[in-house]
Image 1 (cartoon, rainbow, N blue to C red):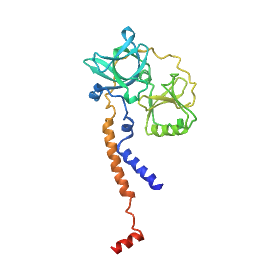
Image 2 (spheres, rainbow, N blue to C red; image 1 turned 90 degrees about the horizontal axis):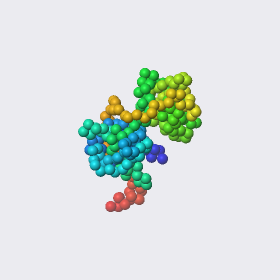
Image 3 (cartoon, rainbow, N blue to C red; image 1 turned 135 degrees about the vertical axis):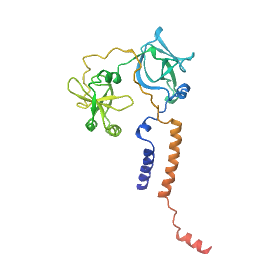
Image 4 (cartoon, helix red, strand yellow; image 1 turned 60 degrees about the vertical axis):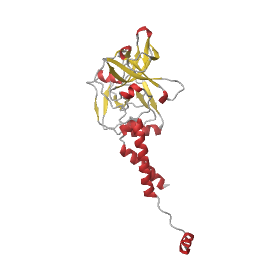
Length: 284
């Protein structure tokens, strides 16, 4: 049992030393799209929610920017997460996952839409833009938010929108282990003196450091602005997954093979001959 435990730990160390946490976290199994795959190093990271607002009541979804074929339609008012954008001949297009009920996520299609047919939903990015001068760097410990029976996660401070609640002790422990590697956080103090911190997920989400279990924190008396046509800003080019999934799999398999060889050399020893074996050898 002890050897098995040590062996498992060695394999974990091998993998952990090969890939930093951010690289591993960014390896996502995503639907394929040939245009996206060809231009993966040119797309701009987005991952924000948008409301369809096309002329005629629908938005046409294409297989790639500028294509004539339509693979789906979106009704106005539907909310979809645009994951990346691409400037195609001076026109901005966005890509999102077209839901295919009954199929695994990896078998869904990726579709392209004109960004001019969408309105951006007010979110944590918009909140930080509006409160830029009030947001500061928090360098203290956030361990206290995980020592609760139920952690409330909000869209942004005083949004009135709960994204999730975490009650399970083991999940809270896992979340603490994942989150607290970060040395500093964005923080904000609301009008009632409550302090908030942003959790460093792909899309920032907030917890109330002062009242982490309080799910009755009222929304701000100043309502969020109505959705508006999105204007490109300072979005950054992102190497979407650090390493492509096929390459990552190849490397992981190779590391597994190397790790197995190392473990065999460390833990396996040639069995000593038994007394019977010794007698047979002597007679020969």
